[in-house]
Length: 297
Image 1 (cartoon, rainbow, N blue to C red):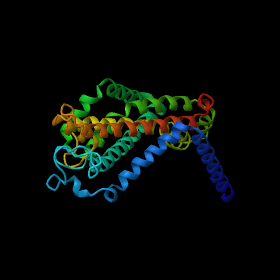
Image 2 (spheres, helix red, strand yellow):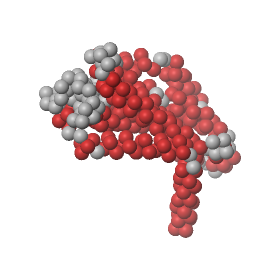
Image 3 (spheres, rainbow, N blue to C red):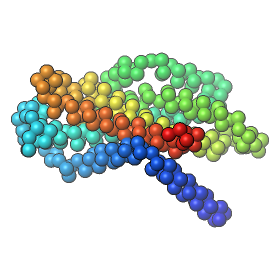
Image 4 (cartoon, one colour):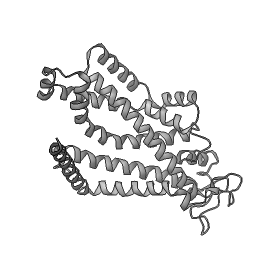
C-alpha cells in the first residue's frame, strides 16, 4: 500500500513538472502570471506601500483634483485623496470579490453540471431547464435586482455575481460529464455495484476538474468586470474603495469634462490589465490541460 501511494505521488509530481514546463513555454501565460503577481503583491502590501489615512475623507492630504506631482504621483480625487493610494487599496476589493464570486460560481456550476449530466432523469432535466432559465435572463438586470435586495456589501456583491454567472460552467461540465459517462471504466464500476456518489466523486469529478480549473481563470476576469460595473452603478460597498467606485466617482464629478484624466484612466487601465492577466493565464492553462491544443499554439 505504501509503495502504491509513493508511486501515485511520484506520478503527480511528474505531471506537475510537465504541466509547468508546458506553461513556461507560453510567453503570454508568463506575462499574465507576472501581471497577476504584481497586482496580488500590491493588494497584500497596500498598508505598507501607502498610508491608510489617504483613504479618509476627513483627513485627505491634498487638494481637490490636483494633477500628478512629486508629492502625489497620480494626483488626487475630488476629496483630495491620493489616487495611487485608492488604486492600491482598490486592488484588494476587486481581487477579493472576483475570487470569492468565482468560487461560488464554480461550486454551483460544477455541482449542477455533474448531477444533471450523470444522474439524468427528471432531476437532470429540471437542473438543465434551471440552467437555461438563468442563461436567457440578462445578467445585468438580474444582478442589479439581487444587489438591491441583498444590500451593499462585499460578500453580497460576490454572492450576486457568483449566483448569476454559473450557468455557462454548468453546461460545460454537463457536456463533459455526458461524454465521460459512456466510457468503459464507468461501465465496469456500475457492473461491480458501486453507487452513483462513488462513481461521480472517484471517476467523473477528477476527469472534469482540469476543465473547471481552466474555466476558473476566465470566470475571475468576468467577475472582476462585473464588480466594476456594479460599483460604477453605485451598488458596491460604499465603505470600501474599489476601481469601479473610483470610476463612478470620476463620472459623477465630471472628471472627463474637466480633463482630470488622472482620476479615471488609472483605475480603467488597472481593470483592463488584471482582466487581461487572467485571460492570458486561462489560455495557457487550457493548453496545459488539453494536449490537443499544444501543437496549435
